[in-house]
Image 1 (tube, helix red, strand yellow):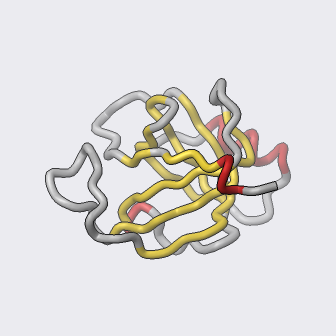
Image 2: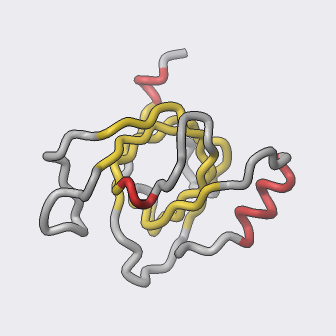
Length: 122
C-alpha cells in the first residue's frame, strides 16, 4: 500500500472561538521543520516556526475516510511531540484544524475513545 495515494492535506488556523465539529486521533508518522514560505489563511505573515506533520488517522468522526494527513502548523502548538506520539485534532470542517491535544501515553482503545469524547479544544 502506498501512503502517497492516500495523503490528505489539511490546513491549520487559530481557533478564534470557532466551534469544533470534528475530532480525530492521529499517530505522528513524520515531524520536521517546514519551509518558511508556507502561508496560512489565519496569518498575515508566515506561520511562526512552521512544522510539517504527517499522521496516520487512527480514529475520526469525519464522514469521509482519511488514512494519512499532512498538516503544517506552528511549533508552539505541538509542545514535545515526536514521531509515534498520538494527537487529537479539533476541526471546524473537513479540511481545517484549529487545535491540537496530546493524548496520554499507553491508553487502550476504549480509554482513547473516552478521552477524545471529553477533550475540549483550547
